[in-house]
Image 1 (cartoon, rainbow, N blue to C red):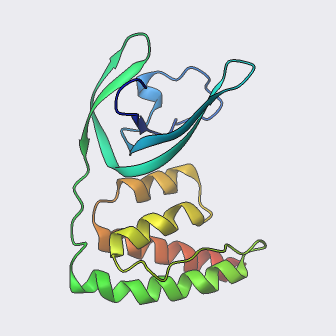
Image 2: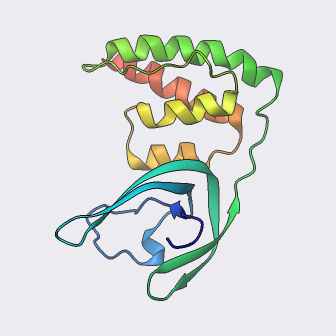
Amino acid sequence: MAGDQRILVVTQRRAADDNPSPQDLYRVGVTASVVEQATLPDGTVKLLVKGLERATIVQLAKGQFLTAEVAPVEETRGQDAEAFDLLSAVFAEFIAYSRSRPYPTSFHFAPIREPSVLADALAPLIQVGIDRRQDLLETSDVIARLEKILDVMKAERQAA
């Protein structure tokens, strides 16, 4: 934390595991910058982070704490016409989806004009399990990611 304040955030395969091994972690996560850090009375460190970009673990090293060599996940088809065509459909479905939830999500999307940015903003707001959420994170094809998000919202709304 004394350096550039960047960390890699990855998901554990089992949340109840207090000391996960490298095999217990997903290989794709998000690099993030630490915005705020606080140490609680019990010694727990609490962080507020801002996600920067998707990253994949190239190599792990275990020492005093777990470190990783990472590489950015390169997105594809994010600037294709089809991706921009999906923007309005995904946004419209999200409005309907959020209204069908017991606790509607209030989020401002008007300035989002990039397909990958919209997908990244919506993915944490849809109600899916860890495996599905991880699949979205690992999907580098922007059109495929938007289509998956659209499918999840439609299915959830129909089930409600």
